[in-house]
Image (cartoon, rainbow, N blue to C red; front, side):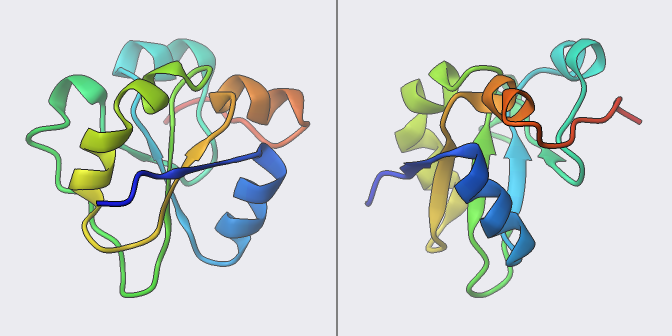
Length: 108
């Protein structure tokens, strides 16, 4: 199994524009208090074992947390859930995304 590669916020944004799917592994309370990356699916780390994470053929997945630590620590488990598609970790998490001036919205 290949472990995911880290990508910068700018690289992740380009991948999303190209059809990649963003997956937020933070817990619901974090999403509610800190906002979300527009379009990001939610698969909280606490429920990862039960989560169904799907990707279309050829679609890449980008996992993110708050600052990047949880995605790094759980890279192997995330890779196992993603199947055969290309997977990435957002370097610096949503904090770096926000610091790069990329959009963050209040959760719905």
